[in-house]
Length: 74
Image (cartoon, rainbow, N blue to C red):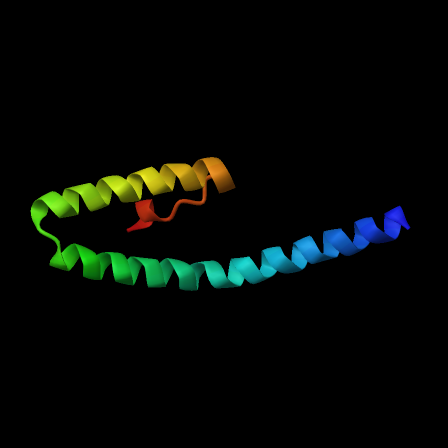
């Protein structure tokens, strides 16, 4: 039973990873589009703070999920 459960869980993990791999570019595109739109309407001080918050979130994401940050590719 443990071996069967292990196989089922490993399969689920692979399936979820494949789905996330497909979706990641769409999430990235949506985030980049909204970030760009926000930057357009912010004043210089707000823009600076927004970019600081983006960098902090990128650091959090690197620590939480590994080095998958995509803002550096902008």
